[in-house]
Image (cartoon, rainbow, N blue to C red; front, side):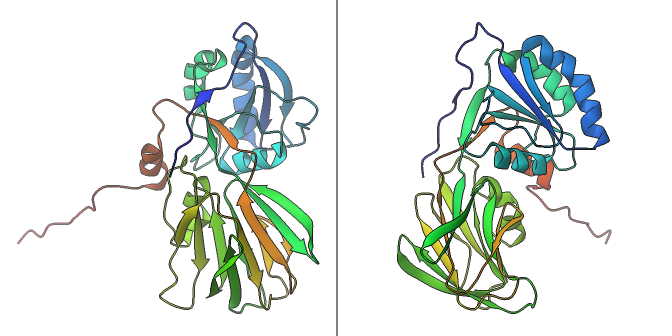
Length: 297
């Protein structure tokens, strides 16, 4: 599997980069961080918008960089808000986990002068295009940064989900739901469902059944270029296709969900000293050994 190379995010070093600042609405830590960081950002960049309610229209003016104040949920919302107009993102953690928003406010102040000069690289991450097909036409679609999932909902009963890969039937799952995750999303819902962790730059997807009704159904890693289609034989009253934690649509009998590589990629600045393995250790408590209590006998 290939790994996409990093590239610089700013072309004209003679001009200040144009920056949009996004943040979680009505959160004290975000407001405090913005007040603290605004002078430093303005010293090295042109702030074209400050948006603390996620309403900025990226189709009107595309910035050189988007600075996100918040946590991983804010990063997902930013990707959704940018839609087809993806710009490089730098996340500042004002939340709890901060797996994607890796920088603390102090870290940001230390690296910002270098970042504003284009000193950091930006890495393209896989996104998925999720389309709901009903009656032979696409009625709804959404970009996914983490995952697209078919989830059951009440009344709770097992689902029969047919999976097609590049037009051919792969298998029928009997399970409570099915997750198709990107490498970035492999540490989210997929991980909780027992799926594997992928390095973020891999061009691959993970297909993970939720509570499958057989021991033979295991999570599967496939190429990001595979086009998947999902159908639910008898959906429940609230069976839905959920994209990055938000319901795209309820599923009806005969609906098809198509999941494929999106034309857009999520562009994230690579932060020096913050790699995938460090994130696993620091954020998810991934360790190389298990503490052992030794007997005094």
